[in-house]
Image (cartoon, rainbow, N blue to C red; front, side, top):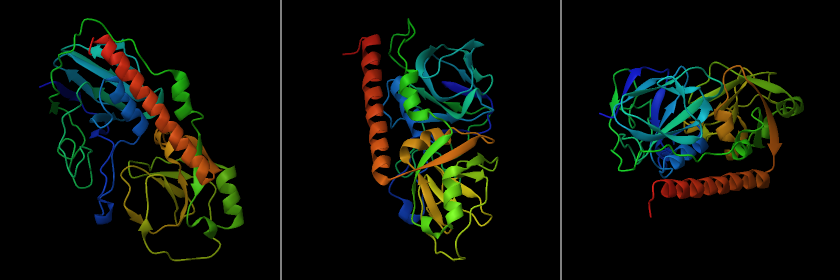
Length: 326
């Protein structure tokens, strides 16, 4: 074996970029909550973004490595330690045989992604290794990793004589994650069903992330929003980032494991470029919504994809240079 879970975390799952092409039969995309961090963690370890990563929440698992490996951590800062020595975030590092990776305390964010050179082995279901907790398929037996579980990653032929030195700069990260509590969104198909006061409050007031938030959706509490008239809607397609108005006047933002259709009014949608930082919010944090037009949302997505391409190129260039790969 290569790693063993010696202390179980609250939710530790194998994820990739998601499962596409099956929403018509009720199977959602799933995948990593923070697709930016998951992709970058793979790039840092010399992988493509399609490789499987481990999504870790806090309280986090403790992991015993039973052979050397090149790994990286990206996303939330949980104060990573290897044999009680601090380990970098957003930078690859070599972890030695019989070392233990653990996380001391959450400093920022809510999800960190652990990648290993070559990727983690995982069950493929409908073209994806992402864990679908609801149907118990994909990933590791379709469930969260538990104490005693073992994963066997491929042995590497990379020379492990010196630590890598490349990393992702704070300047690059700020483009995605700052300001953390301002989330950009576009109006959705049922926006006009809200009354004038609620429309104004949506973009002017702050909301609090509820502790009733999970991979299906983040519930937000705040000033109650209302429709102009009582109306009954039929179930309609929804997506990650869809903001629905609930019967109690609060809102929910659908996340990676969302259902494929919903019957609540779709008043807005978080833009794809801001889903990474929104996914890193924790219960109790405040959030404000900033309305954008569609063109600005598209430009933000293009900008994020360009940044990912630049990071991928830089990481792979440094990886090959460090390990003398032609």
